[in-house]
Amino acid sequence: MDLKQIDQFAKETIFEAGKLIRDTFSYELVVETKSDPNDLVTNIDRETELFFIEKIKSFDPSHKILGEEGMGEKVQNLDGPVWILDPIDGTMNFVKQHRHFMITVGFFVNGIGKLGYIYDVMREDLFYAIEGEGAWYNDTPLRKLKPLKIEEAVIGINATWVTPNKRINHEKMIDLVKTVRGTRSYGSAAMEIAFVVSGKLDAYISMRLSPWDIGGGTIIAKEVGAIATNLNGNDFDFLSQDTFIIANPSIHQLILDRYIEEK
Ligand code: IPD
Ligand code: CA
Ligand code: CA
Ligand code: CA
Image (cartoon, rainbow, N blue to C red; front, side, top):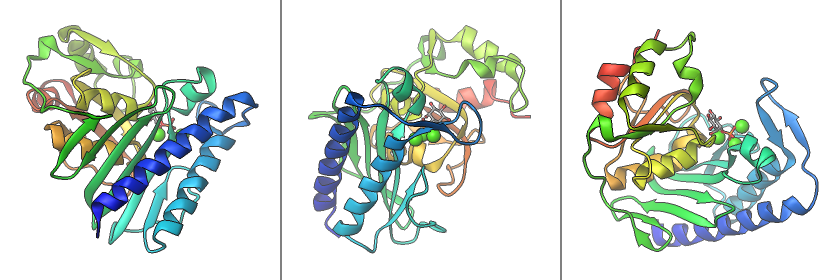
């Protein structure tokens, strides 16, 4: 398998998809809801996923595709080459702000992440990695993350988790928020992961993400030494939803031990 050729194909396809998405702002979006009134999907999420599927199938019909909008086949396992992708991560931002949303793509072979991409569509910025070769922000190599103290950390977290909720001990989360230097919430898991791998955030925590939210990002994470697991400290299961944390290696275990208590 020629990874360089697949990388070239992936980048071209992502850039083309990004341009198609940017062009859609000249006409009206069709916005629908999915599981609840805040779970949005647009015609562009679906069209972009279809665009990827057609491109990948004509590149190599044996490759499987797991995408958020379910336009590909039902992927039951990660055997062989599998693309895990989210055509628009941050759909609510896409609809409301027309910015701060990402295309994110991971290419796996037998469950091992080989190529990872997070593309900021409006800024035309690409974060990407090739397994074992490194990670880049556009043409600039991303460095290994430097250690820091929890008091110096800026973390990505959704405000829901510092209010009483069924999933997690929110008092401990309040302690975390008070301890760190600052918190941010960007509304796109892929964007927050891109910020962690490039040192603009030091951790990002989520109570529920899906394989397509993090597929590309976890591959980039490995190359810069960021640690990505579920909130039990185990590897994320790429076939179902799970809790998620990605963090600078110097604070990953500390956050889990001291501040995360699932109910
Ligand atoms: C969502 C975003 C959001 C995260 C949600 C995801 P979508 O993805 O990444 O930041 O909090 O859990 O589902 O639906 O916009 O692709
Ligand atoms: Ca969605
Ligand atoms: Ca998503
Ligand atoms: Ca999405």
